[in-house]
Image (cartoon, rainbow over all chains, first blue to last red; front, side):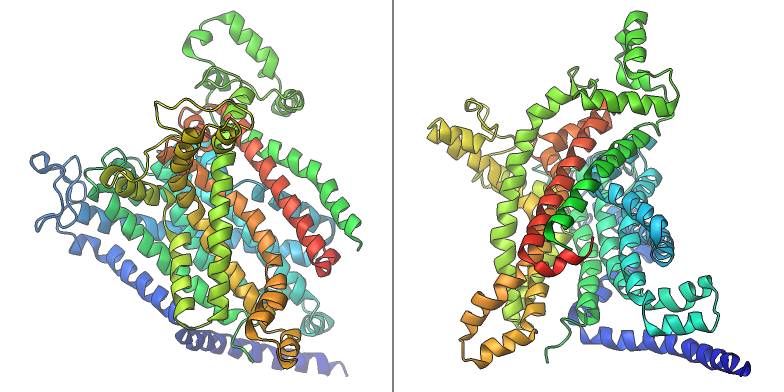
Length: 300
Length: 340
């Protein structure tokens, strides 16, 4: 009789172990069914490639000034023209990917992990603790994202690192809320009760059983948020709170072209690059949402 | 749970939320390592010991931090948000002056959001997986992906600088005086005063910034409308409606749309937050004299009282709008009344 629970335990874990990679493969096979997700993925890979090899592809040093060739319109030498210090805009746009893409990914990884841990514990523990955490999250969510990020960056002092920190502070509660809702839904399932009845400790139930079954909406949200984080960071740079001028950050570059309507190329090209990258992440997220949302998966 | 219980719970949480908002704004503004007085007072005032002493006493700067917060809240309760170093006026006066401009811009952007976003989502949902759906998806995704400040610059460059079809930055041409203030919204005030030329000019000035600001929320609302329409179309009662021989349009308009638009109420409430975020950048581009531009100026001067004031006002407005949206949702959809 006392042997039975152990037998179940031994059987249950290898099965759970084997299921996870196959689910990932299943996810990738699903992904191929969504054109939007595949287009998004292609755009992201394209820009990751550019970010990785910018020093090899870029024809000029992004910081190199050439005062003899200031404000030149696009031409065969400077494909995207040159800015008021004669720097090559094409090279600067390529280098911009090295700032915005890692920034978006790191910000979402950080805020996602913080949010998942806090929200997961909050939902699992429940009671007064849960109530407190959710009210704290409500307070953060009461501020429009850019407004709070702006106040935090201004207070900490302008700069790219402070801007990133501010965006993490703004984003974590959204993850806490999403994962908490998922944990509450999963917590009452029979297999969790089964795990508890065989004496699995709380942290194991949370980490091995509840969280892996709650991740789906977090992935969708993360891919959409990378785009959002890139936009907020660029917005902060645009109003002078993010990356300082010599850095080839896209938002900073666009703000350089602000007073120069006749030299349209200064602002236009970095903006197009940012639009493309953010669209890539949004296409991926939108496609994922369609695939994973069982309510609107194929009709029938 | 009854509806009044649901509303009651939400209303009870409001004071807690507002206290939280002021606390967070206070903590953020005290992240600054420098002497707050140096941030609040001009250099000349700093050299005058009387002014410095008066300020210390009024804001309790020599008290421990938690008491400073209590002083701030006490002043706040009397409507005193402190003084702005940038404008040399009280933050409350500043905000009262800049609020109508932001309200007008936000309402106009909301019009774009609703009158373009919802039809776009409905068309995408009805013609699922065919070219109108793909086109709507691309438009919506451009809307949520485009950097607002870049879109603003681009459209100004095209329609103002190159084509000269639309007026440039600001709320009115420089040679047109603002209409007599009733609501503070120039389009409405000029109509009330019967100033037709002023109305046309204000409307022309409003068009581009509202379009730029509304682009993001338009995209979000159209995606939400699409997925909630698809959700409803998959329900059993839709099959029933079709089975009893109703035409496709009757099914969609009479049965599906009415239910599908309920979640859109929530997203429109949430969209208000995105509009406030967007207003910060849109107002900067279009030199629009609203709260967003005020917030940017405050942030770049490290004008702490102004930053706190403007974030508290924006956040409070935001939660009130969302409360209204949630109550509307509760009224429209009885299923929602169960949870908090």
